[in-house]
Length: 74
Image 1 (cartoon, helix red, strand yellow):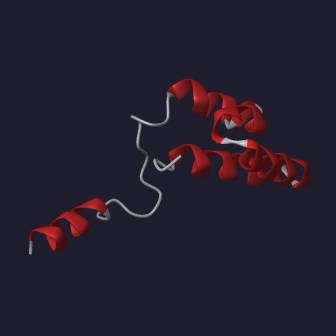
Image 2 (cartoon, one colour):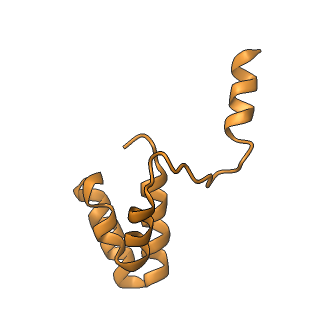
């Protein structure tokens, strides 16, 4: 029963909850200004994806960078 309660509390804020422990304010500002540079520590694949999305449009690049930065697994 405890795992169900923990799972429920983890997702109570929604899918895109902002975890400031993993995302510093400087990375967020950098993701807004130039998204590929913000994900430089997340690997070559992340940089390439964000770069392509940024070339297609600034907003998709920013959204992808913020999602990648918010992912605690990487």
